[in-house]
Length: 258
Image (cartoon, rainbow, N blue to C red):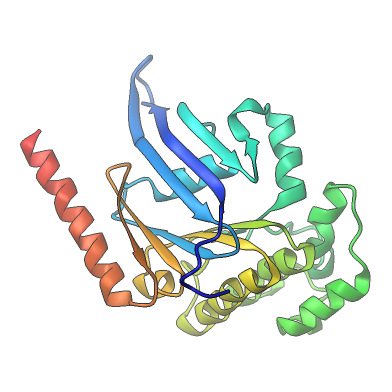
């Protein structure tokens, strides 16, 4: 798909706000998202970056329905996520969404092969074993098929998480710091696969603190103080780093003025 063609958004956030209760203080909340408005294009890799505390992961979790936004509207694949109850959201995720997190989220009681097939089983579907085996082979983990996750390295576990996504072919993948716990080589393998997913029709939304990882994206959303600071094209790690520093400076100036 040509980079100058902007596809229709598959995720729409409008004035999304998120308040969290303050521990030990009844009725007191802290606002993390102050009104996020975003369009995430279909079939692209989009990265979210920003200073610590800017609301990166909260934005991703709200978009996926793993956190319920306090206000605003969230539409994913044409579905109003805030109109669904928790059970309906879970069913929607199992049909349409895959996840790659820093913690891997693999079940220690299952083998690598069974972990890969698990999302489809939970959704009442079955992935042909050949598909699972072929996916493990492509990701270089076929020799670990009958092993448990605890016997694998961090990079191997993250490749299992990627294999789970590739085999199940979700419409959207949410990735939260997918390379945060990996060495450079393992991280690059994971980024290679995330970057390749749009070719199979999958939209990827990735949160990262690493400007080099973000530069792999088609578009980079820079957050600051729970708001969209700016949106820039991917491809240039220095430009990403500079944009994050600018957002951090703007946050600091705002705090001084207040």
